[in-house]
Every structure is written in C-alpha cells, then in structure tokens.
Image (tube, rainbow over all chains, first blue to last red; front, side):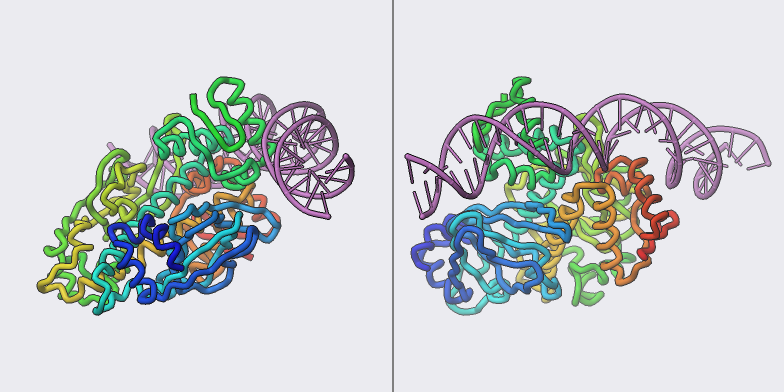
Amino acid sequence: MKKYVPVLKRAQLFAGVGDDEITSMLSCLDARLHTYKKGEYVLRQGEHLNDIIILVSGNLHIRNDDYWGNRSILGHIDVGEMFGEAYVAPESGALLNDVVAIEDSAVIFFNVKRIITTCSSACRFHAMVVQNMFFAISEKNKKLVQKLVHMSKRSTREKLISYLSEEAKRHNSPNFTIPFNRQQLADFLSVDRSAMSNELCKMRDEGLIEFEKNQFKLL
Amino acid sequence: MKKYVPVLKRAQLFAGVGDDEITSMLSCLDARLHTYKKGEYVLRQGEHLNDIIILVSGNLHIRNDDYWGNRSILGHIDVGEMFGEAYVAPESGALLNDVVAIEDSAVIFFNVKRIITTCSSACRFHAMVVQNMFFAISEKNKKLVQKLVHMSKRSTREKLISYLSEEAKRHNSPNFTIPFNRQQLADFLSVDRSAMSNELCKMRDEGLIEFEKNQFKLL
DNA sequence: ACAATGCGGTTGTTTTTACAACAGAAAGTG
DNA sequence: CACTTTCTGTTGTAAAAACAACCGCATTGT
C-alpha cells in the first residue's frame, strides 16, 4: 500500500498532509488496498458501504443499468479521486449504482467513521482531512450539477456542445482528451451512439470542432 | 429571526441541537434573515457565495437558463433544506445557476467559514452541526445522482416512471403530491410540456397511474 | 497469418419528441 | 361579476432521435 502514498498525497482528500503523516494515518483510518481487473465490479448496486474510497490506479465508471438493460454512465473516476461519499450518512441505505473498473485498477478503502470521528492521538492532520473531505464532497456536488446541466439540454448537439465546452474550460485549453470512447460518451450523455457519431461529424464538417479518437479541439 | 428557530430545529443541519443552543449559535454563525417575494432571485448565476443557506419558509427552485432561453429546473428546495453547499470550497468560483423563489419565501444565510471553523467558546454543539452538514451534503449528493438516473432515461415515459416511482418510494405511499405543476415538471425532466402532458394522459388511460393536478397515484 | 473482436462512421427507416396553435377549466383581480 | 391570466389537455405537423444494419479499419489473440 505504501507505494501509493505519493498518489494519495496528490489526492484532494490529503491536500496539505505530508508523506509521513499519510503513512501513519493509513492504519488510523483502517485503509485497505483492493485491486481489480478490467471489467470487474468495485461496488455493486444493493451493497452497503461504510467506506470512502480513493482510486489510486486505473480508471472507473459509475454505471446504472435499468430493468430493460439500458446502460447509463453517471460519471467517471480519475486517479486520486474519491468516491462512495454519497453513502457516508448513517441511514443512507444501499448503493443505487455500480462502480466498474474499465481498466486494471487499484483503490484504497477508508473507514468513514474513523475519518469523521477525529481521534485524539497522533493524527495532527486529521482535522485537515475532514475539511478536505468536506470540500471534496462539495465539489463533487458541483460536478453533478454540471452534468445535470449537460443532460438537461434537449438535443444531442446541445449536449455535446455543453459537455465539450466544459471540458475545454476545465482543461484551460481548446485541445483536450476525454475519458470516453464513442459508446461511453453516448452512454454518458444518454443518447444513441450512431446518432451522436453522426452529429459529431456534422459539427466537424461545419467547422465547429476537430477530433481524432478521444482527442478533441474546439474551433 | 427567532420565530424561525423551530423550523431550524427540524432542519437536518441542526439535528440533535436544542432551541437554546440554536438561538445562541445564530450570532456565532453570523446568521442573516432575508425574505423574497414570489419570482424574486435569491441567488444569481455569476455571483460569489460565502454562505450556506437554509430555507425557513416558502419554496425555491434551482434553475438554469441557457443562451437560447431554454429553462431547466435542476432541483427544488423544501422548507428546512439547505443549499449553496456546492460552493463552500475556497476556489469554487462563481455560481453556475439561479435560485428563485416560486412563492414568498424566507431564508437564513450562515457564514461558511464560521461553520467549518469550530469556535472554542460557547458552541458545544458546533461539532454536531459540522457533522450534520457533512451528512446533508452527502445526501444531497445522492439526490443529485438520483436525478441523473431519471434524466438519463431515453423516453419521456421512462423519465416519468423513474421520477414518479422514486417519489412514491420517498413518500412510502403510492399517493403523493409533487412540488411541480406541469410546466415545471417538464422543465425538471427536460421534456416538452405538451408531449409530457400527452404521455401522462396515455399512462392514465392505460391504467398505470391516476392524477389530479399535483396529486398522483401509482396503480 | 488469419480469424475474431471492438470501434467509429454511414445510411435509411421508424418512432418519438418538439413545436405551434388552440380550447376549456381554474384561479386570480379589479 | 366580468375579465384577465394561468394552467392543462389536445391535435397535427415538422424535426430529431432511436434503431438496425452494414462497412472499413485497427487491435488482439492464437
């Protein structure tokens, strides 16, 4: 687990906390490392969760498949990002969606109660972690609202523009790489892949964008 | 402001805190009461926010109007509910959407820094408020994901079923009242009002649901 | 080397939705 | 009460998306 300390150090949850402190916190927070092969489930709908989880290697999708097999990708987790935080509240109930590794991945589980119950002893930086988590959840909240803004656009083109504009803004550049292939992007925006592909090409022909695979450029 | 203490007491943020403690906390947290007439803006896109806000009377919508005037209702705030929490993080930037009173409303602003920086003095219950806020943000998070699930449904009917099913579950009853009129529900689900109205009536004719105004019954 | 698989793009058809326009009911106002 | 305004349902038409089927290309694995 120690080899991931540098990754944790860059994670928002441990912002401002040094390597040594992180190392000593690992046991304090009951940290457990788990690894998954591509395609395996990290969390499954219906399970109960008492942990906050950080992705330390790989790539994850938050997915929801409904009765009829329609798949929605509700979001993706990058290295260093935290997830599971929607279930920290005591009575929050069972998980409502799946978390799936879309490439070989490693995550670290942290006991929620240990995090929010500041321990008296060694962990001088514990209070900082609590505050970081606070901000992290709050930011995730903002992200979710932003995704809602994309999804609430009526047409496929508007959804694409909304999503791509935000990505460009986030990367501070009109050039950027997205974490989805076409099918995944379609699932993310809840549209049909072929229709979306069509729309993307039209937008390219109209000179709005350029792209190659996952790389996009806004003009 | 004191007349709203009973409302605050029922609010999740102050769960487990007594009337007297709440009253004494009001100044500690720099609480400010504001009132709004129906249609007035509580928060506007582009503003900066350093407060957590609780609705103590009335009804609010979180809205997003885009360049072309398309209106989306991202969510609604009930009495006792908290909002603004997506902007508690220091570098969280300007507000991305509006909060509008859809009836005469009153809200109380609380300084975020005062909340998350536990004061040493009188506020014995301050730590509890922090934890409550934690859980509240986390729950809101879950709500947002749930809304994403509705929005990610492909057809109007599926969106309606997804939304109505959840409301029924939330109310623990197949009978419930929704906080939207038809236009607002359409904006909430990002569909055309008339098409939705049409679909609702078809569903009624097929014996799936009954409704009258905002009252619904699932069969 | 070759088959199998996955991905992205294209096209035509069908279904669904958006849009526009209107009518009746309900609610609010002077 | 008369009047306006708002809300809901209805219909027909136009636009858009979903769907299905297929192709070419790159990647993978044996």
